[in-house]
Image (tube, rainbow, N blue to C red; front, side, top):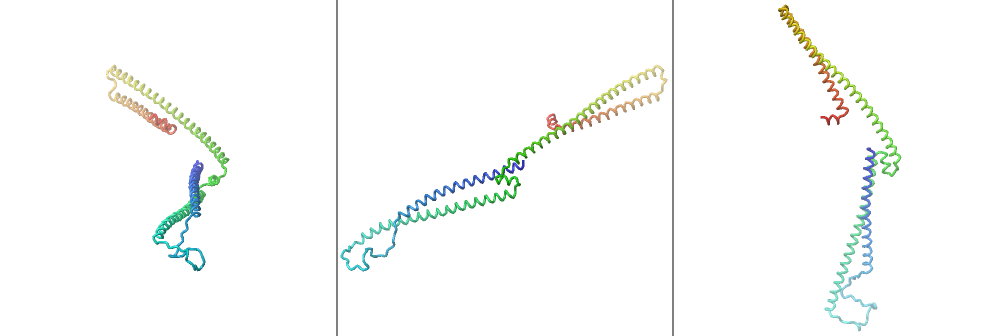
Length: 284
């Protein structure tokens, strides 16, 4: 039973670890999908981005020779137009800068999520190793084999057969003990019954003796009255004393038998409480 309970606890721990691993793998897959989406967006942004070049003020952008001898085709542009164009250029530059800032933040978040995934995988592996170490330290050889995936069907079958045999032995022993207790109870009941019958017989004898004593006392008194007082008071006192002594002896014998009967009844009640406690409790 303890082995089965330990197996159940180990199986529950393994199932909880597997459930946690499944949840972690689901989170990892979700993070991978999000990472792939961010990579695609990043690639699209990297291939279609406006590049800003920082130029010095007044720099000549006209392609040509190293030295331009002729400025005949040059055009004078008002500064107001140049400034208005610069405003639009700065606005576009700020938009591009914000876009690049978002790309940088996305890459930072992607690196953070990747680090969190690796950290979660490391924690999960550490937890699995820790649980395996704890299980190997605290369980028996059979439970180690169960955790390792060994087939314990034959051992479970042998354990079941052994448990059934033990149960049959316990039933036989219980029946044997119950038989002994019942035989002892029957012997005590017979003893109590015989003592009760003996007490009744003694009580009958006491009653008969009392009646006989009373009859004889009446006869003696009648004879004394008929004889004119031939028997003296001393003889009558002696006879009365003898009668009282005999009566007291009979009463003492009856009391001793009654006390012995009460002791046997108490012993029988104790044996019944020991043998059938629920039955005695229901009667009380």
